[in-house]
Amino acid sequence: MKKKCLLLLTLLLLPISVFAETLTVQINNSALRNQPSFFAKVIAKLPYRSSVQILKQQESWRLVQYQQQQGWMHASTLLKSKLNLIAGRNLKGSVSGEEVTLAGKGFSEDVERAYKSSHKQISFKWVDKMEKMTVSSTELEQFASSNSH
Amino acid sequence: MTRRILFSLLVLNLGGCQTISPIMDKGLKAAADAGVISSSQASSLKNGLTAMSKTFEDITPEQEYYLGRTVSASLLNHYPPRNNSQENHYLNLLGKTLVLSSEKSQEYQNYHFLLLDTHEINAFAAPGGFIFVSKGMVKLCENEDDLAAVLAHEISHVQNSHALKTIKTSRLTSALTIVGSEAVKTWGSPELTQLTQAFESSINDITQTLINRGYGRSLESEADKMAVSILQAAGYDSRGLIRVLQRLKEKTKPHASDFTATHPDTDDRISEINDLLEGTQVVTPSVFKTARFQRELGKL
Image (cartoon, rainbow over all chains, first blue to last red; front, side, top):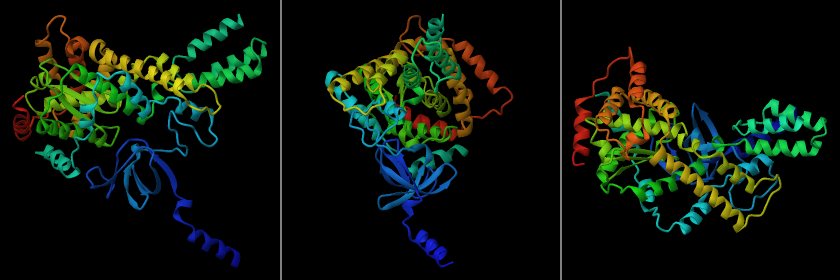
């Protein structure tokens, strides 16, 4: 009985991260929101390959822990991957053939940089500008809700 | 005889199945049993074929994003961007509203929309959610529903990975052979050069499709079908798609390098969409939304 209580106590005291699944952000600048809704306020934007711990699941939304913050992310922005599959860099740890193949697809920031250096006539200025053309959740909600007029 | 069978099985598998097929597996075993290849060769071949079988389906969102960025830069090398932040802001509000309504629920923040400052009638969807609409195309729209139809169609191309499907298998295989073994390799500039070449060829495949060839009837049909469901979910008049296509037909010039050149079969598409909409409730474009459209894009 004592052993069981001790075990239970130990389990309860273990940090949440032991049980929480770790996923990786697979879309750059993925929104971390204060509610499980696309109209909720964006509290942070997470870069590629950020690691998050899943605390809770609600339909297609995940409550996650990212560094010191907690918030909701859409499941489509997260990937189950424990490895740092950065193409063009040394792969650490033991990897399976399949994971190496996936890493070998490698169209990455390095490849874009190499492409730019051999195609100096092609400007990315407006592509960068396009990416900065954001809309706030509030604006979008107002715009979308007016469809009921 | 056995070698011929083995070769045929190899060719079949390059069709792009995600995992090695049971037939292929049996074929390899049979070849090993018959002594055509050793069992370790059969094992390596199986691993290699499984690797080569991966196609556009295995391009991760991150890689799709980088492909999309470069396709977009290439497009913008041909077509000037419309430098008006208010007009583009409206386009993004409309586009992202439609993304929210799509079946494949995705983060709308990752879609980006831009007007092109050309009278040529055209719209493009690059991988990763970069979508372009020319002012020529906008002028074919009489209200927000018509424009929503154009955007919904382009969003559907992205969500169905149509641009990625046009990348020749050889480019992806080439990218794969760079890390073709199961061993961990150290990367160096030869590998990066080879990968960059595969990347460049992939970009060319996509931009050639977008600008010159078009997707073909089957993929356009798929995009039309999904566009209708997006429009219905978002509360827009799906008949906007038919109206825009009809106006396109009227404006067709022979040998034009515009939308009609890469989007033939307009009559067939109109007919298919009509079939899809038969019996559905008619949605009248709202006065409010039409006024908004005219206010925001009236100066084009």
